[in-house]
Length: 126
Image (tube, rainbow, N blue to C red; front, side, top):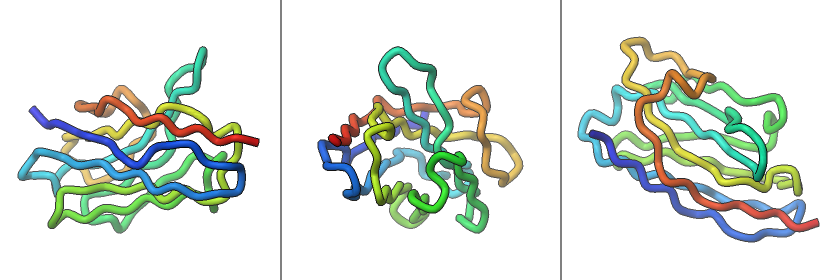
C-alpha cells in the first residue's frame, strides 16, 4: 500500500505561483509513474500532469501547458508541481496519484492510477 500526502496548497492571487509537493511512502517509488489531477466543485476529476519513472517524459493538460511543471526526486520519494501564472479557473482540489504499471510512460487516465492522496486545496482569487 502506497501512501501519498500532498502539501503546498493555499490561496493565491491570479498571476501568482504555488508549488505543490507529494510525499510517497513506497521504497520502490522510482518504479511508479506519478501524476497530478484536480477536481473543481461540481466537476469531474481532470488530468493535470504526469511524469515517468526517471522524469525524462512528462505530459500536461493543454490548459496548464507552459504554466505548470512537474518534477520528481526519487531519492526523496517526492513529486512536485510548480504552478505559475495561476488563473481563477485553476481553483480546485489537487490530487497526487501513483501508477504501478510496468511501462515507464506518463498516464492521463485516472483509472490507470492505483493510489491517491487526500488532496490539497488551491484557490486562485481574481
